[in-house]
Length: 265
Image 1 (cartoon, rainbow, N blue to C red):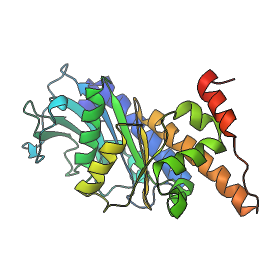
Image 2 (image 1 turned 135 degrees about the horizontal axis):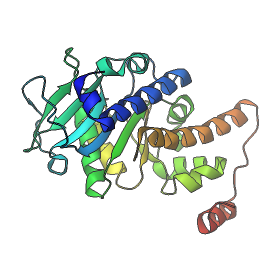
Image 3 (image 1 turned 135 degrees about the vertical axis):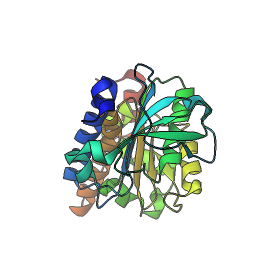
Image 4 (image 1 turned 120 degrees about the vertical axis):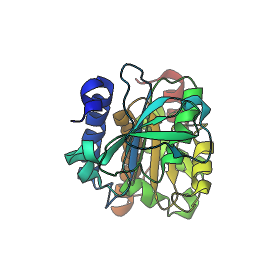
């Protein structure tokens, strides 16, 4: 445990949360190699000076709503197994500068750098900060069944995908009431996929990237995972039925409306 973790319980707890989730993602088989990334915006923390380990790194754009925010984010090139076993060396602690077009790396000092998806994560954190959330966690992972559905041409749009998944399990309706956004294929780690994801997340906290994976936003890493897990459970039920030669009946439109109108029964 380094000096920042010792002096900041919020940072220590965030690292524990990310390590715990990384272990779960690895066990579920959703994180092959260095696939997937996690970030946790803790907001501005001023109780401890938190000395930077290097000069500020320019971001290429300004994230005004995140000025001086502390963000804990997985390092590039690290597997979820690495992160689970040793978060101190495989998770970065960064702070946006007062003029938020750069960040300071506070930990670790071993040369690790944030995931290449950092600009996307910051844009999402900024969006949700502007919505009034004090803390947000972004989880991107590769759930098998949910990703498999994105290969089905008839499901390659938000309306069809949401309709199918909502009909497979009641909790999709309850916990993801605004649906699961479908993001058409873009090059991973590109500005195009970042822009498309940000647009999708203005409507719902969960999106699926075509032929790639899923991403969710919630107040904590595990709550973000829960949203993806619920959607993937529905995808699994659908595929289990199809694999057994059964055309799944699904919830009727009337049943879906009843759940939406009256809540959990």
